[in-house]
Length: 120
Image (cartoon, rainbow, N blue to C red; front, side):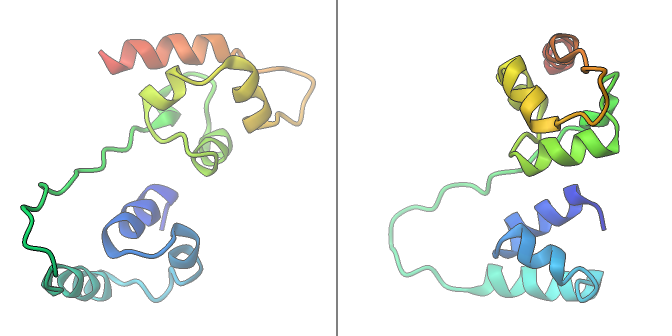
């Protein structure tokens, strides 16, 4: 189960993503469906109008040239899940987040520009 799936399950089913990731072997599609239905069946205490459910859209950061699975995972762990998140992050902060192991520094300015183009 990938980080995107784990995050989506965490957002829908409740609980932290890390808790769900640790239990990823237990989360079969049938188990997830039962958790989701149980969350939907819980009655609301408030009589106030309820907001429409928010659809979580996660962008595939790996489509950006220079971002592979490792950098994408590190960006996700830092809370960067969308092109908009990436485009709004300072280049120095991106370098600190991905913490490259080699002496070659990734071209994060190009990442930001590409993320801006993909947002449109």
